[in-house]
Length: 454
Image (cartoon, rainbow, N blue to C red; front, top):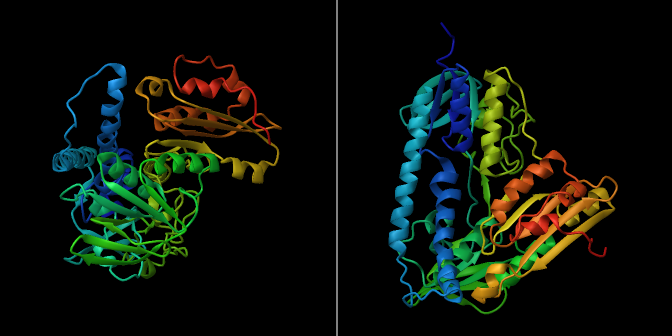
């Protein structure tokens, strides 16, 4: 008989934890998983999935406008009902959560609806009944949570993206504070659905870390949909007879029905018992791990956003899979975090993989930059003032493609396939000898021949 109650205990039922649990169980391990809220984690419950459903809903507004240019006559104005959308979104989340649970059950994983905290290197305590479970290995997969709201007067009147997904009505006026993925995506959603939106950001660029041409192109497009106020943060929020009055650190106050703060996310490690178990954490509270997701305690591992490596759902899934194969399957491998395709579902949306132009010049020095900016074919009949931008960064010495950046409709779908080529180490010559698919926007990626001036 084993000295432990289980071979693997997973804390957290998000994408990374669920994948690790299922794969480990498939390798024959006895697995238990504790989740204190709902199965699916941030991505399924309050992140990627519900947000993308709202993105789809918001873009119908543009489709209705564009239809006239293609000969369609629609009832005017089209009627949108926010509560219907939220109800449908909630039903889909419930369906997906059920699939997560049934998948774990089919794999033989025991799911426990409780909060679990570390009791030691090989033990967890289940709350609130204080039952202790021993495990040969423990995996921390608790993800991240919205950062603590800034200490400004009236901040209690603000919401985060968690609450924004379940507002009872579509707000007439919205102030979004922030400039990351969540801020720009929600600002575009609300604007397209008809809200008057103000996006405020302390810095001078959207989406820190993205290519400058992408940042500037997105800002130009968003400025046509909403008010952008750079160089200012939140000073105070006051409730009035007309909703909320929002004072920023620069410029005049603005009025809103909803103030949404999207000022970052932090690893969800508070109160997890890491100190008691001797697990080391970094300055941000992230669990410190090596390339194989091992913590400072040999029996404890961590994957996903709680480690603050690359905070994207597909990365967490890969890390969970690698952990299970390595520890329980006898097939060791690690996740390459260097080349990770990503998409921002703003309108227009962004797809990016590899280095930005700025990063490439710092690391490689002599690079070639190929850039195409054009009006997509659909806009020629719709009459929409819309531009697309595509950019390829190439190492002059080796001809290897270092990065690809796309701004425009379908960017997220395109970058997934382009990501395969960049991950494989494709050269610009490989792109050039690929036959174009015509007429598509993506054909620009294989027809750019002349680099931009340095």
